Amino acid sequence: MEMPDFAYDVFLSHNRAQKDWTRDLARRLRDEGFEVWFDEWCLRGGENWIVGLRRGVNESRHVVFVVSPESMEAVWPRFEVYLAIFQDPVADDRKLIPIIHTRCDLPEEIAIRQCLDFCETHGNPLLYEFKLAQLMADLDPSRERPTDFELWVQDYEGERWDGIPPLRPLPPKSLMPLRANPHFVGREDELRELERHLRAGSTTAIGQVAAATGLGGIGKTQLAVEYAHRYGPRYWGGVFWLDMEDEEAIASQVARCGGPEGMDFPGFESLSQEEQAARVKKEWEKATPRLLIFDNVDDANVVGEWRPVTGGCRVLITSRRADWPSSLGLAEVQLTTLPRDKSIELLCKGRPDVLQDEEEAEAANAICDTLGDLPLAVALAGAYLESYKHDVSLTQYLEQLRQQPVLENPALVDFVQDPSPTGHVQSVAATFETSYGRLDPEDETDLLAMRLFHLASHFAPVSIRRDLLLASAGLDPEEGGRLLLHRLLGEFARHHPAPGQSEEEAWEGVAEAVLAFASEENETGLPATLARELPHLRQLAAQAEMRRWGAAGALFNALGYHLHMVGSYGEAREKYERALAIDEAAYGLDHPKVAIRVNNLGGVCSRIWETWRGRGSATSGLWG
Image (cartoon, rainbow, N blue to C red; front, side, top):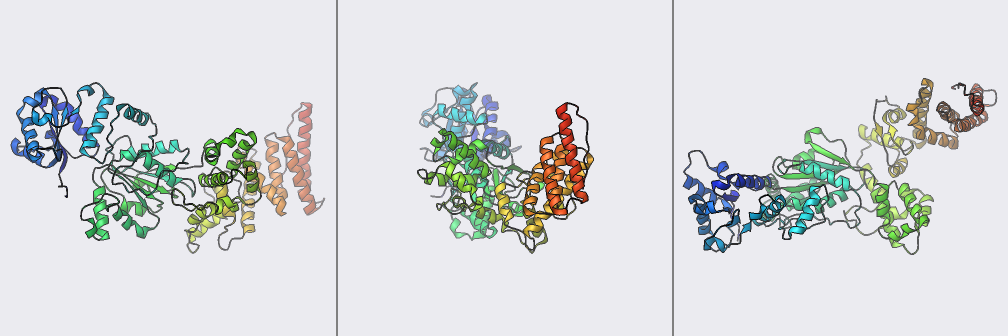
């Protein structure tokens, strides 16, 4: 039998003695998404009371009667109650729901109905919240109805004080194909941040949108799944998951939300797909709290097209994109790698006993460091170690990682055949390839992005100055900003030069840019700015010697000069000696560059001698 539509979810019948209390109740119910008939809000000016009250009762699914001695003696509440009883005399539809504000004698026609007792809630906020949750579940059976007050208090207090709710069943009519991952670790701060952004401190906020962003394999989808299964019950209108990667398939996924797997609208099958999607979007614009998860979306236009423009829905986006237009009003939660302790916990989920062994614990730490604490990589390595728990120690696996490029390690490529909890490919390199494959080398902007991506891989695995990266591409530098390339992503990038870009040309571009920057900074006599770029200078100097690059001596000389300035005389001497040896072999003993290297080496040796004798006079160095 098809349920009739009502303009209101609940009609509040009360006496003026409880007016303030009932008004607060009306506001709470409205804030939770219920359509409430309350006389102050719904009676029209000049309207006949009898006609207005009859209309309100007829247009409301339920009549909540606030029971008190005053309401039992007043005419209008009794009129409203008997209208409800007349429409549903044996309570088949629970038209009348009595709630007891103050105890009093009840006539039989009310007493035979189960009452909600609010008598002890006055002055007891926790008990009031518990009873209110029961009432809301009675008004909307899709909500979970609490029954055990002590258990409910534990959950409520945990959420109230920024705790994270336990895993709980999702509301009925939800469409959520992904289960919670039993190996989920960490991300507590990110879960709380998502909740703060989506709820925004008020259940009446309209159109809250949050995005979990980060590189492939960082755990964006997994975070959204965990959020849904922990916070989803708060969205009693349902949780709806949509994979937005294929734009042509989005309409069918939206339509599916209204079918038997989701909200199950009557007569839905007779509509076209376009009509079904429109029907779902219209439902999403109601005040009912719902959670929409747009997974794997990078196009702001797609979000704008499918996001409800009003109503109680919240939208959670997962995306590799980090630069969203401000017009969307989107709050971004950027995911970084796991903290080391959580990374080790994930790695050893299948064999936690190994951490009791000091050598194995050190190997676990080194493995996570080698994998850059990337959740996907750590999880795949953990699955491999669990499968071979009797054959491969963590120390042995660490040696395997060191014997070949990390992204070619079998555990990270094709070892895990079972589908992942999020349905994603179980390969780190393939995950990176998914994003990289979206770049079009025929597009000028995408081609530049491919070039810069490859150039960035030749820097050290620390943050990179934006102007240095642009200079390495021969572009005009821009002031400010730093970039960070994950070490595994850097390994991937080194094997993916842009079309027409040679690996040698790319490396030399980076080396020349860093050498020019170091020379300019050394000439200022102020070492602070170059100090942050030392990892790049060190790495490039070592690689330059190995590659027999013509300016290798100059890189070691620049490094030595900086170390000399900051008082690291022993290491400065070592770098000057390397510069001298390289340039003597390249240019001969009589070349001016060699003379400069000798002078610099002599200066730092003099400084070392003077420091040893306690004299500490200044020395100078030369460039060339």
